[in-house]
Length: 598
Image (cartoon, rainbow, N blue to C red; front, side, top):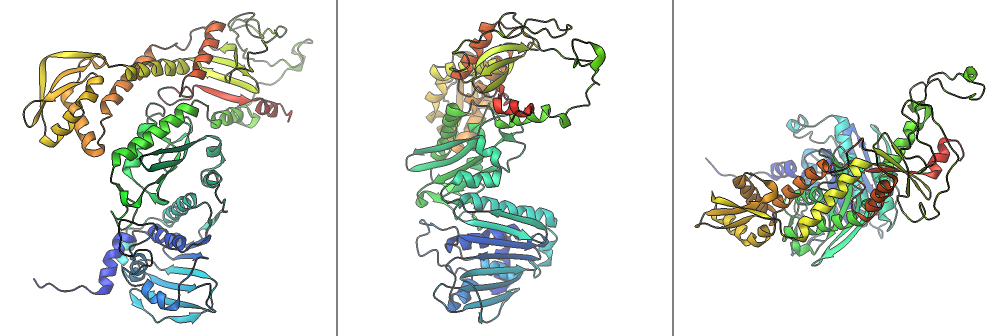
């Protein structure tokens, strides 16, 4: 078999397979070039989901005529000199434009600020045409037509125009969040115009443009630093969650990334606070010395590799948990919005007809009514009716002056259906799910006990010997003291085995070998072993669920108020162990709106 040199066009087409996977990949590369050029306004136009047309216009520094010829050659770039460990731009490989030009019809029109006219160059399937003068505004216009026309086989793997257009929208949204000082406009024949005006340094305002105003109302600010690595951003309260991970954004030195380490840390930070199958909403930004992170892992530059992954993972988990402990116990505003929608007439079933003549003393009595129940006569504003009686109202009792004013969750006023506590606050009311709330309180108490002292251990009559590779044994033994505080006693048993002598008493009979192998895998991947702690916390959550105030139990006024006070003092009490909200808050202004008073 004869070895031969591949042609430049074929080399570029092979490279295009890695760099340009779909129209969204091309859009990402072109937007990154515009941002590196200092653009403050970027307009993206598409047709046919980006397969027919993709045009990116910016007001950046532009390129001189002589630079246009270099721009469409492989590995020609203005963003990298000699140090691959000091990358401070989004692009640096010099592969995007030649890769696009090898599989599409590419044209570049550009003018610098000090030039009297612009210049244009075209590439069609790898064939380059000479540079020619052209009228142009300051900046650059890159137009890509008929993407993959030179490699028809790639077109067969493209998704529908709608799906490809949606992927481009996602790219623009991520870039918009990362660069709030830049105005982004996305338009095309297959979409309505999507515009994100510049917000300057107000990053939360830009995030609200992308994720909606609800996120702004339910976001907790994050700002933490550890050993030179800084984490900033916003995380949603646990009860503000979504059914997929499309509302999770991560950036490293301003670069949008899809990094499994960061997603794993985000899941761990919200453990025991979000239901299974639901995802938190978060925007995280990491600032780190470029020498401590490798962005050259893949030509698409969406994956990164940290020199100290354990440090970054621990920073993310710790910062988010600290933020949730500080503010995460508040209820999501979406709960109140849902309650408002439920009260609106158009959202209700047709009511039973009113019968004004039913009683001369009750001219507006409905044919069927559902009375509210106050369980303790004299406690709230109502006497205690039976479940089948008509509502009986008495004169309002005086409310203690300091009851609602001094407490965020107010003072209990009634218990409905033996499960829901209604409390009056200074500016509204709160409805509490008594079982969910107490379940969280019990779980937090048990978890604090786990963390404040060593977990009781049970000795095995016969130690269990687990064969493992020597590297795994070394890692496990290095964390033996940490495991001992969690009730797991291990020691080395020869060069390639671990002896388990004690296991956590809480877990009872357990698969020690499976646990040890899981911990070894975690240590190899993240250099941390949280699996055992997670198991203990999961068991604590289960025990808390079964040991909490049950639904259907009538509570005395002092018990209800004690529960409210405990919730106010417990971090994370806004949701139960399964991620459901423990209470919903309705402002007085919302109530007045229901009655047309505002």
